[in-house]
Length: 238
Image (cartoon, rainbow, N blue to C red; front, side, top):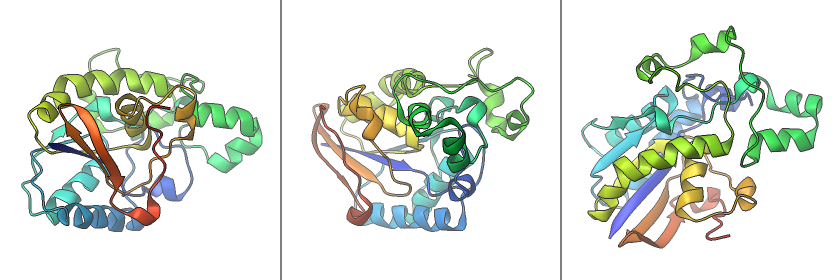
């Protein structure tokens, strides 16, 4: 039996300001730090060993992971990958979500934010937000950094990485911890739970609430959020 623990980073400063964040490398808010600490405490209560840990190139996810590892008295040893980065929100990056919804209308707003294969307009090459990206991005192969992404685009980088780097450890019955982002985890959940293109629009991933997925022979046997009060619906095979 293997446990895969999926944790969206704690609230970020731009989450708190209700802004589209995407690839901008913002930090955790004070609330986000507390959420990361609580995630670590909840995972510690499982009383299991964490064999491998993964996160993105973004400090909000890295800090969440390191906080969890510290809470569990574990070595700060983990794998970082740009493939686990948040979805790139293109020209919406940095905009206030409520103001954007009022400007473009609720229907278009929902398509940009939640749909499977509709991406926002691309970010301009001279957009100041480029300077706010993670310095770790310098290691991404030339031409691979997007200027906008749909959830489908995010899926097409997350899933190959999962299949190449993470799946083998689940086959070996190891326990895996991934600290990532709302949309990179939505993409992974779409794959793992076989969620349809239509139903994925309804999937939400709460900040700082570990989702436990138990596998046997690569088959999901059980899944649950550790903080029951803040749990969200998972649409298995829908």
